[in-house]
Length: 171
Image (cartoon, rainbow, N blue to C red; front, side, top):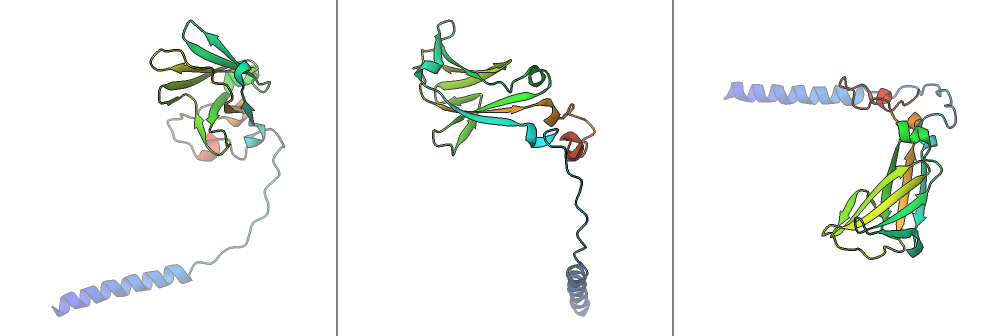
């Protein structure tokens, strides 16, 4: 029994000593010099373009071949470079600007999808049951264009490179 108590006491003493050393031996170092300023508009979020568009009844055209309503949004930031090496994302809003759902999205029977081409985003709305949807009218969409300078050439690298290399942070 004495041996067990000595062992437990030794363990607690070791934990206490380790804790004391860990918390008292840490000191904050000096702040290093500021890094170099990045080139404005070359890499990173400076190149990402976002805008919010509100549609109306006139935005939508009915396509009887697939019972869809399609709305075409003109967006000059979708260049050939974006098509070749960048990406476009589209979100549908709740009308307040506080909640956004990424497309493609199914909400009940209603399905939202999108495609893009040079200078345009095409939003398509269909019904899951193949029926004819109502004209969507006034809806809020957010378009995000990410040009190639902000996107890594190989994000699926099997070597699991550091995040700085994958997202080209600081280069």
